[in-house]
Length: 74
Image (cartoon, rainbow, N blue to C red):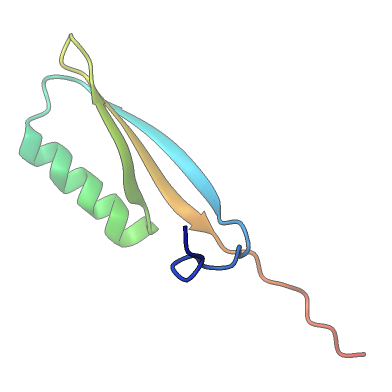
């Protein structure tokens, strides 16, 4: 196995997760619009969607946590 395709290990990415549940009464288009709005205004991206046997949608959204390093001037 060659090491040419590998990147050196970088800083670990930290994620913030948010769980949202939609009842089966919500049409697919409405759910899509609500998730797009959260993505555009909150910086969320889709991580996982599970559709239960009763028709409920359990959605997990994620966004990166950006830590700002304290500058060292001395």
